[in-house]
Length: 522
Image (cartoon, rainbow, N blue to C red; front, side, top):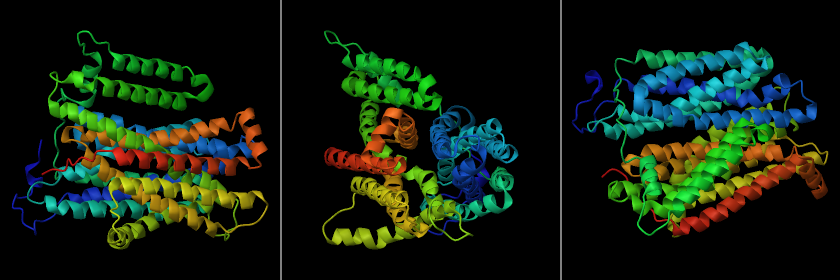
């Protein structure tokens, strides 16, 4: 139901005021992002120095990475749940409100159980559920507050929204490691919890002003319904190869779940999901035309576009496996490097949001116009492919630093500026461009599905990290790595660099054949 007081006059005037409820959402986002990055950026050093002390010293870093990347997997998986609850049952406002309460409870668990593993891990689960659940909703909720009379002001608000995200991330990265060192984990995790509680209260205070779009009825021509029709449709005299392929995906998923005792629930469940998506997508693509008649042509064509976009997303997953390790592998590397006594290695992560704020205007005002002068159009796919390649270079640089450390030489942590700069430039080209690309390629009825799959790409990126960590626990693998002359950390760094380089090459080849669409609103 739309709140009349929150609807701006449909004048289309350039001076139409911002909706009065927008400041509540912007402040909420700033506090929430500080709380999330505040706890996320100190998670790895806390695990190594406190919660995992029961492990041998040489196993703590790998165990901390497992916990961190499992947490990130949850954060980017639960948007599926949050979007479903909002679209089908509660609407965006109530879903954000209830899941924010879960979010606050998770922070409270971290502060109260900083020395008790079950309680602490419960807190991480609740934060993943709360943060991930509201992730796809907050930006969409911002869009709901605008109408035809003031929609031109939305870009200003989204710019402020993005600025607040990086503002919160910068100061959280800078301050929280110091709080952890000097005030202890209870306070260091309690401060982000307090900020999240403030975010919840501010969001609640604006309740009477918001435009609340009601949940939509089930779409009879959704992606899953079209895929089901395509796979089950019978054509006289023809077999159903797509259905057989999709069935193989189900068998592969069951086989993946059978590895739970060896690989753990998270890895096995993600592998099962990946098998269903891969084989189900291939099967649907083979038989998609059979769904015509049961669904409108626009829905069929929309599913075809989504399947093509999923290939692009799959090729970005190696980028995310590199990007998210800046808060785990790179923090552990920084702990081995020389630095001032007052500086904590986790504070290097503050470089990322700071460089983002600098690189976005540099790209738009300097780099892209310069490329166009030389006849090179920086299309979305070219930017994304270049971003993946830059991430690979960042990890070559990080691996080179690790070789020096493994050789017994001392290195200043300032040397990490180079890989951070390369990785952040890659992030700007992949992350921001990927959102634009996903929106432009998806038909209106499929935009929600596309954004969910974009977030799942981050989940699978972190899955590759967990699989690599599981590999180096195998004696055969570690013996082989030792035979190469590299230490395990350096070897994995070069492995991930090669992984991303291969993905960049495949991305470039696929981009040459990709038929670009334009589904922006007329």
